[in-house]
Picture: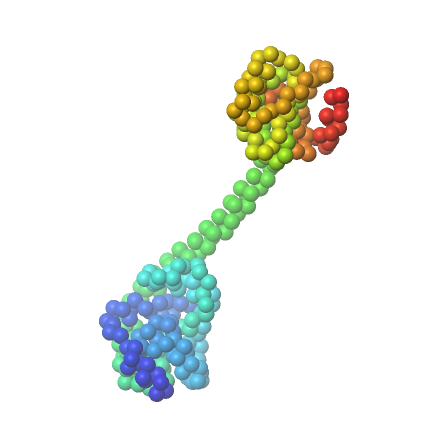
Length: 300
């Protein structure tokens, strides 16, 4: 007990009665003060205060002192706006709350003139606080409950957004573009081009400079080959393209092909329209189970 007295003399700080009133909170419908706040007023460490109480537990029944739950500890922070600690962070330990009777008993446990003087001022502060504080605390509790509900709502919204993303056109093995969805179709094919890690192969009877522009979106180091019919204008455009950008190889189709195929690495996509015209009319893009080698083998 002598150590506590010495700590009080060294650490006691001046404070006014308004400061005491601001530290009184309402928890479980009772006006209480927390151990850390009381220790600060007494000028001692919280640990020392609690140790003194534990040595005299028979003097502190439940209506004198109780330990807060996790939710109560978080909620109590919202009642003191001057706290520097962010609400919602993990609490290192669950504090103890002392009712008016519990605070009165502390003076007999700490046994010092400072403790007695501080307790007198605390008792007066308890008397000065109007009963309207109970109403204010109910409002605070409601706000806390709304915040908790909002957090649950945010989680639900995030789950819904994740589900939407899971079934978006980027994740589907097939996608249908209505007439006029030129940009959506072009963006979809662009994403397929960007997704390639090793190679891109296009089999399409009708190719022009728009397809060359599309293939510039591929990742560095990814090879590109276009199987198409001979077209003098296209070969001229291809030559100019290859002087500035990574080369795109041209392979003459041995015969006319009705359907179009886009190969990215080991995936084969059936494309219902030439890439240069995709989205101008109703068309579909579907991932196929067949291997790229099987498709390329049919070109021979």
